Every structure is written in structure tokens, then in C-alpha cells.
Amino acid sequence: SQQGEEDPQALSIQEGENATMNCSYKTSINNLQWYRQNSGRGLVHLILIRSNEREKHSGRLRVTLDTSKKSSSLLITASRAADTASYFCATVDGSGNTGKLIFGQGTTLQVKP
Amino acid sequence: EAQVTQNPRYLITVTGKKLTVTCSQNMNHEYMSWYRQDPGLGLRQIYYSMNVEVTDKGDVPEGYKVSRKEKRNFPLILESPSPNQTSLYFCASSLYQGMQETQYFGPGTRLLVL
Image (cartoon, rainbow over all chains, first blue to last red; front, side, top):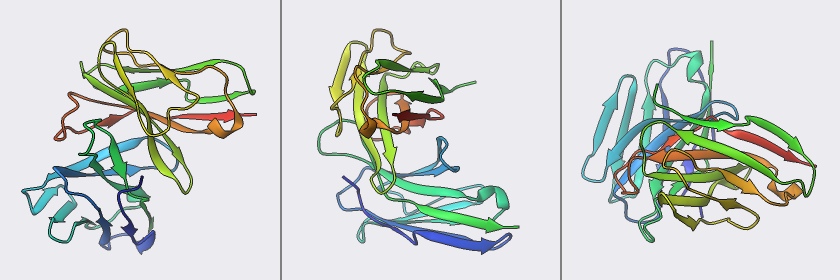
């Protein structure tokens, strides 16, 4: 089952601009993770934000978490062509102790040189 | 280098011909799992393993088997592949099953069943 929706589904920007992607989820969480996937390739873990954190930074990435709205956002600043990829948020299924990650549908980001 | 490896990366096979996709991690992780990724359906968990000799079904286990005889390896077995198993498969691992853990993914195996 999908955790929620990501918005927008697709985003096209120029190099140097900022990119913002949003993610909503349905259940209570312990943490939320963001992953990047380059065109049909492996998933790369970007950042994990815990439920008691509101904002986290890693290099050009800034993630926010609003547990009252059950939403998160990923901001990529000063984007580069190499940032072109699909970005997914994921939460751990807390209901059955399976460790299963529940992914959103993803945002496809295109950064034009 | 800490990593999750999968083999093969690409595979074309025919219906009914048994195949195994290997997964190995060198991080001494206890938890491993398999996902498949399909357009419009996203990523879905197939099987997972909490530790050696402990495996359990995920959301879409039909048509798949797994084994966990060693901590580092978690092969995915398709006894009689069918075209609906054409997909992109990912193996993942984390130190423990716990909710605070980051999961690390392999590079993926693209399977086509004719």
C-alpha cells in the first residue's frame, strides 16, 4: 500500500534554481526517509528525519517534517544537472514490525543545464 | 566499501525456467528484504528477513521464495517465473529491523520473463 502522495509528480527547473518536493503520509511515524533514484537504477538514501525533529540539513538538502499535517518537504538548493532523478519519501510500516518501507509515488525532477 | 550487491543486474528468461537473484551485503546487517518496483504500483515488499534462518512474507510473496542461511546473503528464488514477474527488483538491508534504521539498497535487477 502506498503511504501517500508526492507533489508535484514532475518538476522541471533550470540549473542553479531550487527544487521543492512535498510528501504526505497517512499513519503515525517514527521517522521519514528520502531516497533518490536515477532512471531505473538503485535507490540511494539521502536523509532520515525523526518524528521529533522539524528540520534537517545535509549539504544542499533541507528536509522539513510537520507531524501535525503528516507531511514532509525536500528542498534541493542550487540544483545541478546531476540532481536529475526521481525522489521518494518513505516511512517504516509501524503496524506489523516488518521493517517494511512504504514509499510514495515519487517526484521526477529534471534539471536543465 | 560498504554496499549491497545484486546479481545478475539484467536477466531475460522464459516462463517456467527457475532462476535465482543473489543479494549480498558486507555491513553485517541483520535485516534484509526484497522489493519489486513496477510502474504505477511503486515499490512493494516481497519478503524480509530479521536474521539468519528467520524469513517472512511481505506484501507480494506469491511466486517467490527466499532463504537466509548466512547473514550476508539473501537470495530471491523464482521457481517457475511468469510474465507478471517482469519487474525491477531491489534488495535492501539495515543493521536491525528497528524503525530508526536507514535501509541500504542494491543497484537493482531488471528481469524480463517471456
